[in-house]
Length: 266
Image (cartoon, rainbow, N blue to C red; front, side, top):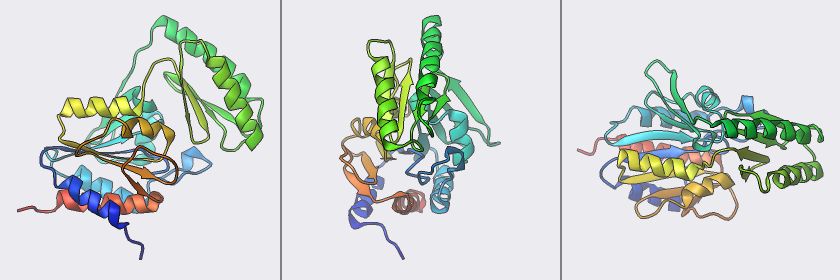
């Protein structure tokens, strides 16, 4: 039976030993759910789902659960099926909300100026033309950004169209982010790191745990320090202090943390 690596086990114990409010936060794709070719088919691993449910049922003065993703807020809520009370940050923090007791999500979306709306429309038109030039590529439109997906495109086409979109963005009032087989361009400056930093400030948390697998998650890892625990899922250079191999091991870590923070400490 697979077990959590020793370093992660010890880091979890040290993190949960801190008193006060703990934020338990995570990316979705590639962490709670394995990466898949069809984004609509992504689902939380069963062990991670059980750990999320346990964390969601913990004393809110001790634990607050948050999911932070590049996905649209509604999609994140539908696919992750998080427990009531979970704080959600979609589109890298451009959208935020909370899961209500009835399972619905109360959402807040960043408002755009007329100029930003015009820039977004131009961006959608141009990015759409770029995506149509490569078989397998497709464009996702969000409330404040567009996402060029290249997972199903050939390697040479993926590199070409990503470069074309980034070149188009140069000198324009937009903000580009590259991730696993995606390039996302937003008309407002957002990042997962800013979202988590603001969440910590709003809640006055004593420590933050965060797991992520993508380049965009590095923005979170870089704002964590001291008693915080940053965990990279998978290979690659990272600012995170700990690492697990894949979503399966990430589920083991989440289980360990859920058990530690919810058990009776008498």
